[in-house]
Length: 385
Ligand SMILES: *Cc1c(COP(=O)(O)O)cnc(C)c1O
Image (cartoon, rainbow, N blue to C red; front, side, top):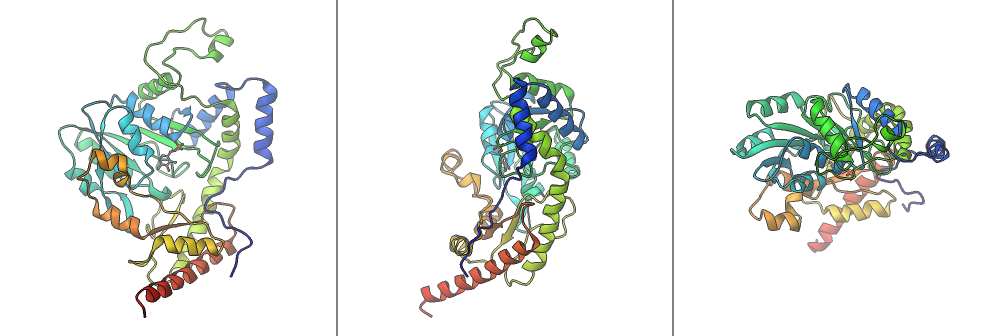
């Protein structure tokens, strides 16, 4: 079977609405920090049952500003998963705190482990960052209890889970991503939520150089000058991106629903393939951001991925463990996370986005079946059988 159409791993849903939205910003002549950013913040907060939100230039910026606003810094330890995108851990380093890597629960539930986290708490631990891997919402009540019992701050890297039930309100701060391959996009962009309004206002201040008023405030005559009360950053979101965000957020609930439908179809198909498992079976709350599968132990993931590619299916791996990247290896050479490492050796991510048709799921599953058979033959050839 040769493919004429590539089934992409992820694909942004963009069309006329986005074109019109961007054009209307250009016609308005007001390009950044205006009404659209403010409206996008209100609508995003509302969707998550939060009072308020702060739009920023990326999820990484949101994580950085939340950690800074919550007062984390040198001498503090922050518990982090290693099974995440590197930004989760980099943000801890930005504020001068020390990331402490925590293993996952198990292969079938690749969330940061409560038990391993408890073991790694020291008198320097100040916070824990949890990540809703693949959009599967971690048990926030349990983590709130874990944090409260130890007087720790609880932060969510919610890059995978915008619009999911139970995300963004039980933590001290939550960061979301609108990068191109996420459940909704602004091309680049992010959002911060925080349950304490003072923390959120601190995020707002630090987003724009620590300045006490915005250009818009001054334009409208709400303010005449400004003061700078903290060493801030430029992590602003512009009106063009906010306008895309406003069109996307309206459709996010439907898209998430479609992602869950496609996931259910995948789970049915995968049951037919021997040796392949899918994590989070029966998980109730999810934004279904990724479709991760576990290949049979010993299978060569890279070879399977290239076999899939030959069959017109783009796959990926989420994620290479952060503690094994050379920069973190140098900083923390002794870290070993057996469950995370085992998971990453077996994990393959299949295409999942609302633009997929039901038939595409069957095509991907068939390609996986064939690719694994190829894998079996390759192994036998190598062994000289
Ligand atoms: C995408 C992603 C980020 C970074 O998001 P940006 O908006 O690109 O900064 C952080 N954490 C996780 C888990 C992600 O998937």
